Image 1: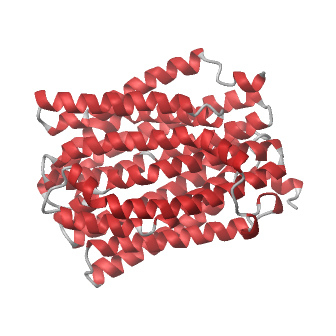
Image 2: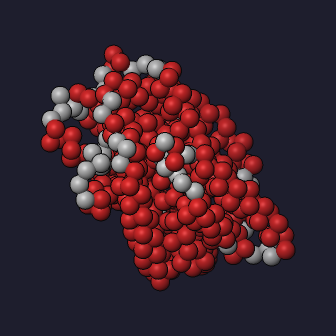
Image 3: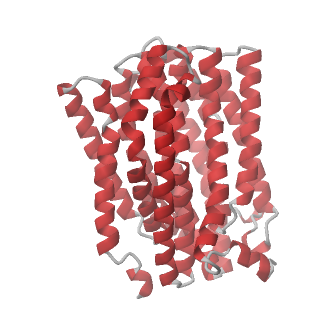
Length: 451
């Protein structure tokens, strides 16, 4: 059984608020940093060794991959909210049932995602308007990538459980190992053996299996109250219902936003393969800009869940304010740095002047608005932690899907330049932030728990 001292080290219901949030968010930041390095390695190595056509093939798959993976990751996020609440409330039997139901769901979802990805890849890439000279490599990359679906899903499920009980250190260690494995395999397959675009996807799924196995191994050797046992992996339908209730809005939100971004990507595709390569390079850099946004949003979800489970309502409110301010400040600092260094950063992926020009144009349109994205994600994280996942789903569905797609579809007809597409992001971030601000100030988002 876990000792009281060990339990208090992962509980976020005690101790200084700023310290608990920062110490939890810092490994998340470093972990997401390595995750981004992991994701960027394919593009960097492919762009430099195989050229702009191959870089465009990898880049054209990004939005579609997130569309396919995002739904299941959202469900895993909902499971984390349930786990964190029972852990904060010290209800061990329910905690165990929630964890093993989550693992069972991940196994089934991983198999389903593999089949869906393999079958739908060519049709969806055609629908996106992927340039014909890029299509064969795009289909190959996409299909190989989705052969590793069960590893991606199980990794996210396992990390969600570990983070929900307050352990962000071990996922960081496993991500570092996995990222280094990915880079070494990319250099070996692409740089040394010249095996092509498909080998980059193969390197990615091998390294993801490494991190998934390490995470599951950790859970199977964890303290008894949240230890995973193979014999206990089954669906508890009352827990599955709670996981779906908390996770379905986040899953739908991820998928709907990804679908909107697929529409945006299809408009970028219409400007040719150099635009696809340049914007794809920027998207990898943008991932680094999202690091403070992601880590504080995730930290707030766990912090709010545990403290509401423990009925520490005032502490939850103070933690929410602290997390929002930190995320906004750090996101804007990173945004300014990317704005200034954009041409140099884009050129690291590919030296073609057109690729650099397209990537720099996108960076200098959106990066100064990162503070808006940070605010929206933090409020969404707080709402999910409070069990109100439908609120961010509806706001983001409206702003980041319906309005974004409508804007791009209409505006590009009147102003047929690629910068018109780029402005879709800061405009919709502004709108969602305004709605979230009004909701956060006016609504009592802890109301149900206090009653």
